[in-house]
Length: 108
Image 1 (cartoon, rainbow, N blue to C red):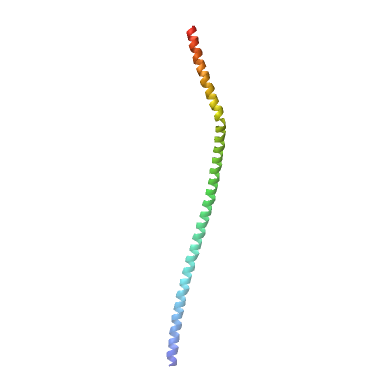
Image 2 (tube, rainbow, N blue to C red; image 1 turned 90 degrees about the vertical axis):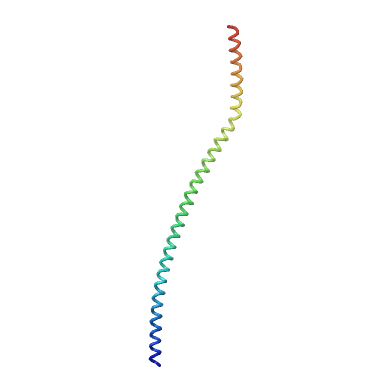
C-alpha cells in the first residue's frame, strides 16, 4: 500500500510539474501579448497626441486668417459710404458732361 501511495504521489507530482510548465509557458505568452498591446497603445496615444497638436496649430492658423479677413471686411464696409458718394458724384459729373457736350454740339 505504501508503494501504491508513493507511485500515486510520484504520478501526481509529474502531472503537477507538467501543468506548472504549461502554465509558465502560458503566462510568458500572455505577458508578451500584454507588452505588445501596451506598446501598440502607447504608439496610438502618441499618434493621437501628434494629430491633436497638428490640428490645434491648423485651427489657430485658420482663426488668425478669419480674423484678418474680418478686419479687412470691416475696412471695406467703412469705405462703403465714401464709395457710394463717389459713385453718385461720378454719375452727376457724367450727366453734366453729356449736357455740355450736347450744348457744345448745338453751338457749333
